[in-house]
Length: 326
Ligand SMILES: C=CC1=C(C)c2cc3[nH]c(cc4nc(cc5[nH]c(cc1n2)c(C)c5CCC(=O)O)C(CCC(=O)O)=C4C)c(C)c3C=C
Ligand SMILES: [Fe+2]
Ligand SMILES: [Fe+2]
Image (spheres, rainbow, N blue to C red):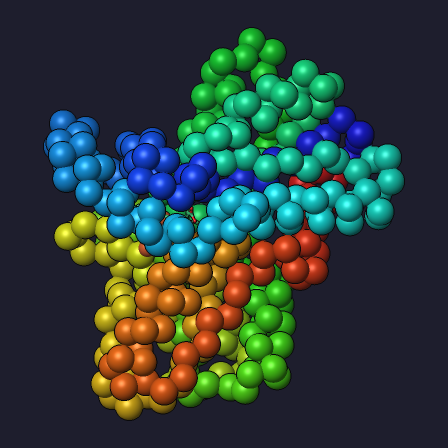
């Protein structure tokens, strides 16, 4: 490692403000990425512009308002805080050789290309792109590879840029999740079921070769094994689907409603596809799905936060950084 190394922590991105206009702008860019929605452009354009963008932003802006903080969107606030902590830890341990840590987002402000350009102008010449997606999917990490290829294409003297593809089964990632669940159990007691709710993707993507589902199942199994759980005590599900096509099953909301109706009394939910708490965890899982479970007959529902800027997350990422530049 040398002092001209830099790490770009990459997250999905988020609207600039919690209003319909900002959400529309964000969704227009995000949902137009062919990695995210694989429907042919000629078919997708009228659906996006005629059905989704005129109506969805108002409803989603409401959801964002319910989680917004004085500093902005939780996804951005916590990602930046994590970068600061990682920088402090690496600077403490590596001194002058520590790499510079910054954040970038696939959609919205602070793009990966802009960060590479800004770091290059400051003299940094070796880059690690570190997408904060533990499990690889073409819909998320694949799109970071596309942006990496764009950067390469636009340079004559190509910069040294490496990417970390995934970390779904790394022992330090699994240990971080295990510690977080155990700490939750110590503080709040243990529920009847532990649910691993991952962000969904269309079933078709998996049929065409996306390894995301297999990596999610691996993460969950490794954590459950480390906790010594029996198969009846835990389950995997998939949340946040969009549109009418079939997505990965079982669906989190349907499963929770079914459990409530079947007299499952209490559930702990953790979302290991998300490194950082965001709309999909803080609103959909912590509020919407809690209400659903309780209304269906469940008695207690606990959401276990993402690793966020915890020591376990900083430890995991600093290990990845040190290995990448070794
Ligand atoms: C067509 C759709 C989508 C796919 C495929 C998809 C995959 C996917 N997304 C994440 C992580 C996040 N998604 C977030 C929000 C979000 N996701 C979609 C659609 C797809 N995601 C939408 C439309 C939205 C916006 C909110 C909404 O309109 O419902 C976020 C949170 C952003 C925030 O600002 O807080 C994250 C993070 C993963 C990991 C993933 C596949 C593996
Ligand atoms: Fe998403
Ligand atoms: Fe959602």
